[in-house]
Length: 254
Image (cartoon, rainbow, N blue to C red):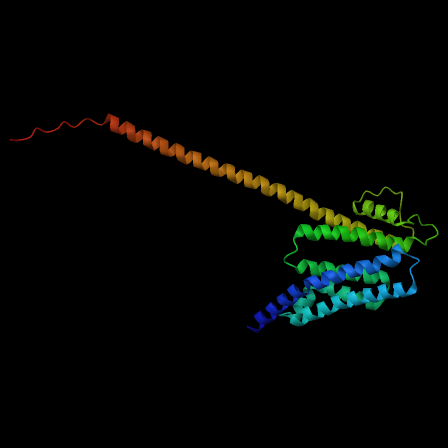
């Protein structure tokens, strides 16, 4: 009974905090993008954006701590949600801005997977858009000031992210710094994984359609065979009635 109450409390917590955390993730996206898109922003604006980033990360860390406290078996929860724990601890190891981005994206993604109202299609589409946007901003912030870099504008960064995620790789834009290449590897692996999910979903949809058509065809065939059997049985009965000798009526006795 106690485990059931804890499980229901955890479900209620996840349901109630889903929308607020989604709003905070949008605030994080804005706070992360502003200093990169506007490199001439004032120090007060940059400090405000940094505070928002840390606040959002802190909110997701608190969410993880609460879910861990409400879990039925905490050790099992730690083993099955180790990626969440790594995302919470990552910025504390070395508080780089890029680590805050990676950890927050991981926490948002893991939290979105828990929401029953978010379907797989929505999750994949949101992941694609998020990776494309944040990958572009991250590589632009790393490569823009590089002496040998060729990713100088947001348009260049978006184009590079798109070609990298789709594994096309035209080569007209490429990162030259070590951190930029690390971002490229992460974006490539993420793009391959997401393309695999999309391809699998499309294949599953076609298979389901074909199986549905095959099942309908089998039902129709079975119905036709059943009707043919009934018609043959009726024909045999009619033939038997025709071949049976007629019974003459007996005369009445006076």
